[in-house]
Length: 144
Image 1: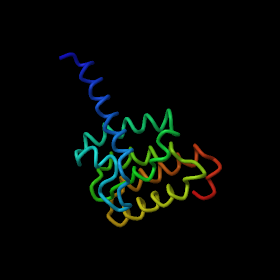
Image 2: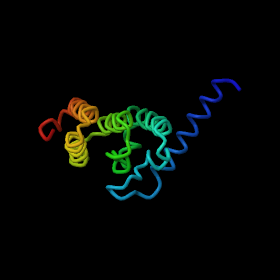
Image 3: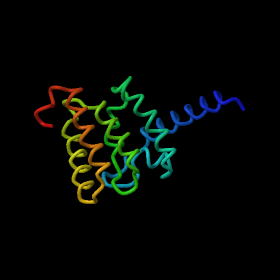
Image 4: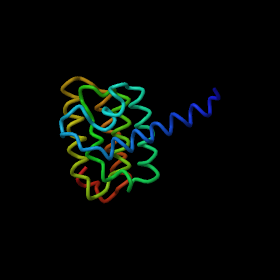
């Protein structure tokens, strides 16, 4: 099988999974069932694939993803540091004055829980993403 075809197939499969997950019923706030976890089935490689696609959408068409922001929550127990970093990076591209309160609560939670667990990698990812968020939306610098 040609490598390009496999890659295209994987991209389309991830796109379909992401679309399905974002349009599915919202999970409870503190569930381990965030969109990427539900679609990836807890498999970090599947989560990364889906989150890379999500990040691409956040960069190029953030208005299509912004309505689903609450479904891309960080799972502090199950998410690997790489998955957390991808989710937080997506947050920074989705930032707007309208959703800043939601994002700040999520950043605060990441920093607080990461500090309590001694997970400095997740804390650093949250701080870096928060700085990127403030840089991308200067009108929200004061709340940050």
